[in-house]
Amino acid sequence: MNKCPICNHELKKIKNGTLQSKRKTSNGFKGILIENLSYTKCDYCNEVFFSPEESENYEIQLEKALEKERRCGHLLTAKEIKLIRKKYDLTQQQLELLLKIGPKNVAKWETYKSNQSPAIDNLLRRMNEDYCFFLKMLNSVEVRYFSNVIAKHSFYLENISIIELISKLYPDVNIKNLSKEFIEYVDKVIKNILSSTVEEQDSKLILKINLKGSYIENR
Ligand SMILES: [Zn+2]
Image (tube, rainbow, N blue to C red; front, side):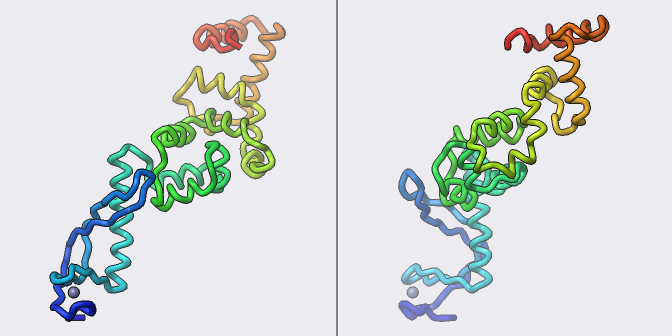
């Protein structure tokens, strides 16, 4: 293609060009700069043409630009949101129910059709970093929509009190790295303490935990 199919003027090959794309957001249209583009341009009518390869590259560069925009706004990228969702085996709909937001939102964030709010972004980050927080979210949903997820986390959901205690005392401990036997053991020791059937030595140990975490007193 050497001549513009619209105005029949000469076309110019552009390498490493930058184009602006207008995107619809909740606050109206917003321009975004897309870099590293190859295309053919008509300087007379300003029309831009892409070969199939160039248009494939356009899609890649567009996603990079949108990723950059999210990072600049301190928001999770589409890939990061998807990773958090997959980490907990959630469908897009389940994540929406968990976050208590309307349908189709997650699909829009994961394809850059819209950006998540900073408040939602914080929730997503927290549920990613804090397993206990995720369990508590899971505890507040309608069970029938989450049977597969609940089944996967059932042991931890049943032992949520003791898990909260451990993660409060030792915030750096990854709960998932603790064996189930250990969690059950700590649970048993604490229950024994509370029912005063424990040995003297053990009770001193728990007293220390108690003073440090002041968790049991608060309950
Ligand atoms: Zn033209």
